[in-house]
Length: 403
Image (spheres, rainbow, N blue to C red):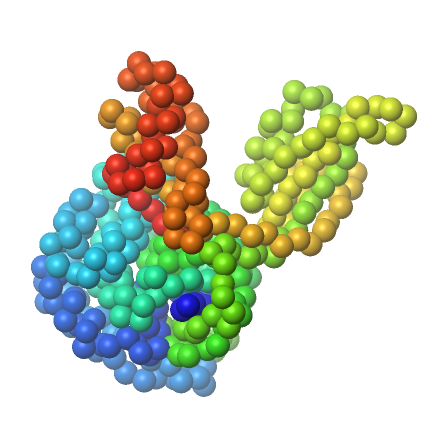
């Protein structure tokens, strides 16, 4: 079974990941041949071996004419769909642009189809994403189990189409937040992860963390354009075979944060749980307990990745009356998952799906969206739930995003 690990501890951009895939063995000529099928203006790709902070790496340089044409999502998807790409590569590239559109739409408060793609709609970004899709397909990684390290985003500011923005820019933050992707601390006062790089990583990742147990077979190192003095501006891709038969779930080190509270207005608990999830908790819940002197109490528990623990603790202290919390390390095993949007009689309903050995074993629609669909269609809520769940388990959805 093929596994892969992407080291994004120094950030990631689309051209860097493409270079790492080529360095790991993806045929550069095959990537060029696939890109030639895109109906775009003259674009030229070259590759070369360079050094970054003293380390050998491969760089792919994308030379594309400047364009002021701001594409919308349907135009980009039509461009990809008409290029006769391998099926897996086309689906991956489509999913990446779908995630980019959803992130930008959330930032601007509009529908994904109305997003004007500026940087991410430029020719070099299209080439980066489609090129990575072709490289991943060539290496067999679109069917592999892929783990991504915590992602460095950097700091400082960056100049974008909407002016000067603090790093990470809003689209990157929306992509990483939507995927619950861990962020790595990094001293660099510069942008390390671009929106294109973030979209590629979160679309590809089956999980996040250190390199999984495997027998390394290939290592690819992709370089960014800059060579700053403080770190190696590279992305690494490690391709290996699982050293033991791997289950289809993802194993992640987590921390349990808990406390017992017996003096909080019970009407506040829903807001407390919402605050913990907003602070980065992967899950949060409470259960009744018997406190000292027979008082009724509540055991509050949250599950958080290591880099989110401090934020979750702060939220517990801010929103409850407790004076202390208990921390315990645990291991979480989670099913690989994605999310799809089912069009129920004209009303979109988001559905989270979980996979076991490649098969959908659970499909959970977003309840509030199901209620809206039931009200709009006049159908019973239970019927809408059943029909949306059945559609998500088949092919009756209109948008999908791997996560």
